[in-house]
Image 1 (spheres, one colour):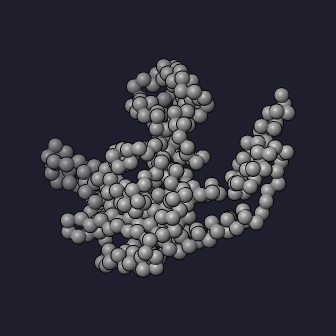
Image 2: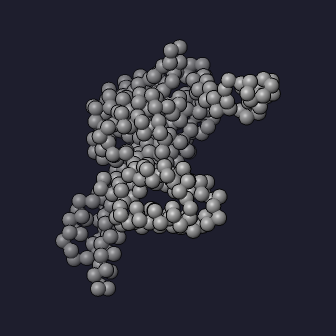
Image 3: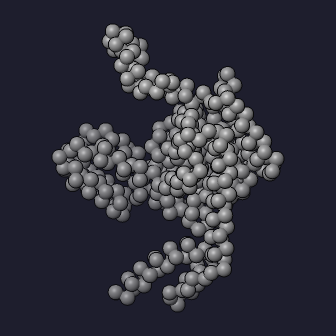
Length: 354
């Protein structure tokens, strides 16, 4: 409450106790306790504000959905909600969902956890949202069970998350038949932190990147990974060992048999997070959050409608005489048709060069 950092607070406790050995807890336990207390100590009337927001939301459309999770003292702990439009969109875009909890939106440090899909234009589409009190397995289990209740017991076919173990445990239990993939970007971003201490860091970084991105078969990856580990003496590196054990969750060549809608990361979640940046910040109260959430969502819907109209009224010319290109021209949105043309153009150049 005084704004003193946890490590300084903890050091004062150590001094007062006469040494670390006289304490029955560590700094990590202090941080966990303070985070839990902070996240559960809402402002006066905040829980009622959210409840009234959900009541208004449902009065406008009975297909809106919400769940409020309270602790033993009836304090708001977690909330999950989806509007009618998002629930309808899930019917079309449930193939792949990204889930990211790294975006903090309010002064109580409750992570804003959006479920995000990809629409016909390849753009992110917000499906459902939650505000969570912590990132423990039981919290994620509650969240995913709420998801199933909201979506008529229909889990996503595939989901992309970060490497959170608690999240993985909950997915395995609640979504046992859902393909789970780790965000590749989050993994590769950790390379400097995990490996920069090695004298051959630059070579290790380059070799690891080539092994991950350029392996065409599983056997190629296995061969190149083993060579990298042996060449640079990385056998004892726990981070790399853990990644190898879980290679079926993140290495492109091991997950390519599943449809991922062109995604390998939680980038869609992050793009939605960026979309909300203009409306909320770390000091946003829950009362203001509910208002700004609606404003941001309306803006997002308007942009999607404009993209739909543009794709319907504008036609992108074909670059070949192939009938298959004309079929895609009629079936795809402009954004996806442009992606197809990139591939087709490469095929044409390949044919011409041969």
